[in-house]
Every structure is written in structure tokens, then in C-alpha cells.
Image 1 (spheres, rainbow, N blue to C red):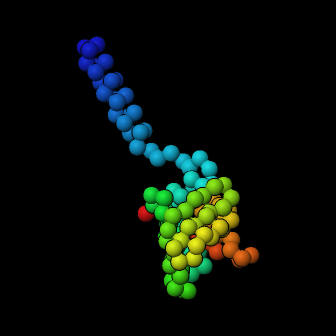
Image 2: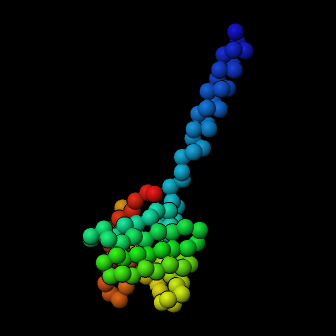
Image 3: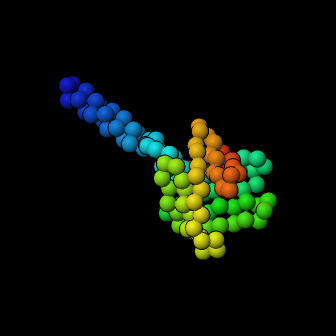
Length: 115
């Protein structure tokens, strides 16, 4: 009887530990939070910003802008390396679900969404 109870407890511990291992870790800093999500343009929802494997894609359907290339992110700025426009440095802030990118004293707002 003790062996059956021991086996049941071990099985339960394995199931619980396996379930916990699938919970994604929360982003540690702003750069990781920026890269962990895709972002949709807030004002009209007519654009998006996404990251994958060290690459980015920025689309604004209203203006017809479409940029892609490599990027680097730190706590304060997103640096985009594009073939069409060269290097672009965009200071950013993240507050909750909102991302604000700054460019030439203007801000573009995005809201995060999971794919």
C-alpha cells in the first residue's frame, strides 16, 4: 500500500513540474518586452511592428511604408538597419500594453498583441 501511495505522489510531482515548465518567462527588461511581442499601430490599426530571429518588419498601410531588416534594441532605443533607408535610431518607451516610438519629435503609438 505504501508503494502505491509513493508512486502516486511521484506521478503527481512529475505532472505538476512538467506543467510549470511550459509557462513562458516574463520579459526581464524593456528591450526583451519590445522583442517578445508583435505590435499593432494604435491610432487606426493600419500598421504593425514585428520581430523574429534578429529581424524586424515595420508596416504602415496608410503611408505605404514597409521596412524590414536587422535590428538592435536596448533599454532606450530601437536601432533599425534597413537596405532602403540606412540606419534609423528610434527612442522608445513602453508603458503597460503601449509602445511609443519617437522619430523627428513625433511619436507613433502601438499596442502589443500575441501572435
